[in-house]
Length: 354
Image 1 (cartoon, one colour):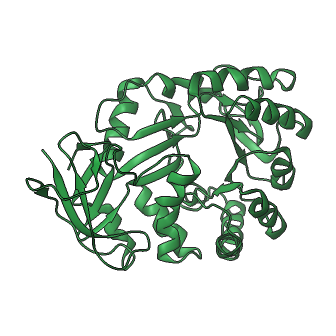
Image 2 (cartoon, rainbow, N blue to C red; image 1 turned 180 degrees about the vertical axis):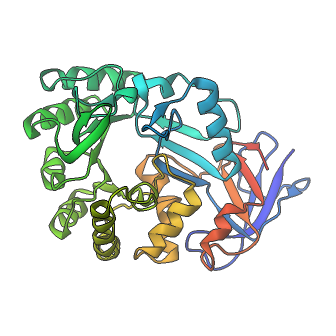
């Protein structure tokens, strides 16, 4: 079966265009007489969750690892919500690399296992620690398995009784990270860095490709990121969407809310690629709304979860002759971002799932 839709292309279109999908599921460049009309007046090239963990879930005592069937079920739920591309930002032992994705599931770009030393990451997610003197070797090993991304935990609190305690501290020296980055780049890979302290400038100088969370960054760090096109995934659902456990945590969250309302618009003006990522605290529609609530305009927030995500992750989405991926909405999400939770048609790589 072939399909067609006449809809305003988002994030920044202003008039309808015609899109055709042929019977093989590929984007076509000419009208198809027998095409079934898809519902919807607005269309995006699929939503992108650029920092997610389908093999991890939150638990009462901290994050826990999910088995393959549970992870696949979670990915299917995300697909049904319009998420068509996921960057897995680490999984216990690299388990996400072994998921057997069926047609109609989101594209998955997985970073493999978390790279962190003993005592500075969640034990349930770190079946094998990585000491500093061996950082480059396992990074290249993960790249060989994933083919694209490596995830390094660049700072983290000391872990006591299985949970982080106190302030985050660097996990590896900048020299060790730089050596690892150089080797990964030479092998054709890219590095995502978990960082919540003021290490961002050093990591950018070391050559990492994306800053995950970045709660300790400032204006000078953003200007460095703009010059080298290092992306920022703020993960606001995870950082700000959870209640503080102590008065001090609540105060820190309020301080960061004030700061991020200045940093996000500045990042956008400077041209820093801003990515939408839910961590383990989704859904993606809520993350987009939080980006808008904290300083991005609706169009810019939508870009973070669509075109910017595709382009930064090196994924095509609008080329004639490629498997079609699109999500339609009856109303304009730019007028009300909650509309992102109500897609009316979804096609992922040529497979219609709604």
